[in-house]
Image (cartoon, helix red, strand yellow):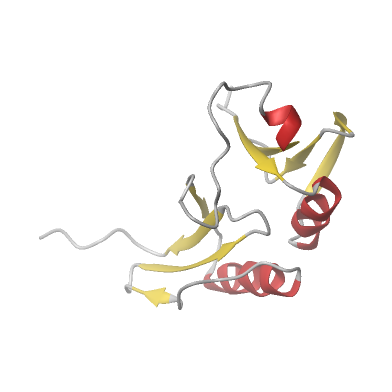
Length: 134
């Protein structure tokens, strides 16, 4: 059985966050959600659990990071092609996300990134080969 990952993210506006991830082409699993959270299906093995701040506080005694001042986490997602990287960044920007960098082409790897409306950083990359051995 493949391992699955469920990434839990605090969000300020649940409907806005759901709409953002659906605009990227990801689906929502309605079986896992209510007014305080939603499950976004990225792939068969990757799920993003969006939780309101009140609900997220049920999972940790620590303060929720103010992503306008600090980095909470950087999430990296492998894409099937350069076009998928560029397409997801374009969809993210159109849906209200931002970016702070330009695409980077290292020959064997192409990457770009976006920041979702809650300030979580998403790195997207496509590897066409392994880096040369030095």
